[in-house]
Every structure is written in C-alpha cells, then in structure tokens.
Amino acid sequence: MTGYFITFEGPEGAGKTTVLGILQEELSKKGYDVISTREPGGIDIAEQIRSVILDKNNIKMDGRTEALLYAASRRQHLVEKVIPALEEGKIVLCDRFIDSSLAYQGYARGLGIDEVFSINEFAINGLMPSLTLFFDIQPEKGLTRIGKNDEREVNRLDLENLSFHQKVYEGYLKVADRFKNRFHSIQADNSIEDVTKEALNIIEKHLNNK
Image 1 (cartoon, rainbow, N blue to C red):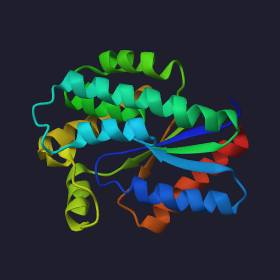
Image 2: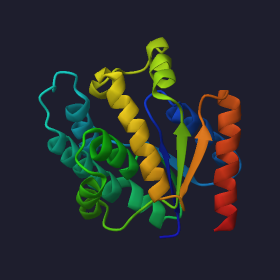
Image 3: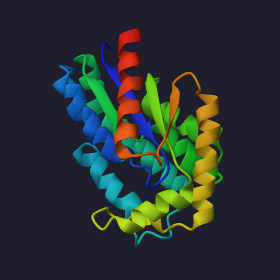
C-alpha cells in the first residue's frame, strides 16, 4: 500500500475532530489526495455498530462486549474504506483507531491493554497507522468544552463520571509511551489556530520523510 494512514486520538473534548476537518481542507489545497473518516463508523455497517455502542440506553453493555463491537466495526471500516484508499495512494485521516480501544476499554474499563490489543490484532491484520497525533488535554477541561458545545452529540461515553475519563487519559499516556515511535503529542488546550498549525507541520514533516 502506497498511502498514509494517520490517526487522531485524545480524550473527550480535545478538539481533534474539528482540527481533522480543517487539516483535510488544508492538505487538499496543497495538492494532497486526502480523505477523512472516523471510528466507530465511516461506512454503513460500522455506523450501525456505532449507534449500538454509543446509545445512551445501552447502560447494561458489558466491557468485553463493547471492546468486541469496536473491533468488529474497525474491521469492516478497514476493509471497505481505509485499505482501498491506501491502496490508491491516498492520505487517510482517521478520527480514532486502535489506540482508543486500548485507552478506553483496555485501561479505563480494566480489561487490560494487552488483552484488548489481542482482540484488535485479529481485526486489523497487521495494519497500524504510520503516524498518530495525540491531542493532549486534561479531562476536566475537555469535558467543560463538551458542556459548552450544544451542537455536539452526547453519547454513552460522555455520561461516564470524571474518574473514568481520568483513567482514559492515563491509559492514553501509557499507550503513547508504548508506541512512542508513531505518537506525537499536541497541547490541545492551545488555540485552535496553534493546534492546527502544529498538527499540519507534523503531518507534512512525516509525509516528506517518507
């Protein structure tokens, strides 16, 4: 595959989705062949699974069930959208990927990072991002941002208490340390302009080095 798989990670309210949208436009203007997508979702089957995972009524969902649903959604998304785009030489910007599962289900849910990684190894069949941008923000600040954004969907994970989101943040730090060769941290509580500029610089440097 000749394309570039770049993922965007971070706690709730980090602003990564907004930045991803801006970066897709900026990279397109510079002549790059780029698409954006998200997890869970991105294609019809995966969006259907997303609706089950994030439904606020599904409060009985077991942690392992949740992890398996994410992995199933991930597999279908890769097969239908990501892999074909990479084979065409495109840059794929993806809002969340395997690292979200490791931080949320592996660490915060207590299932084990290695155990959740094992589930996902079967799903991704060796396909990992070449670059991951981690939008670093303290959980309290991120959740405050969410509370101020009336247009953002409120899903089941948003309703978790602060201690859960603190564990997610801790999990991300552990995952970032484990995969430090591809992780680049960005201070997400800076202005959207500064965050976007830094992210664009990191991506272009990555593309040029390759």
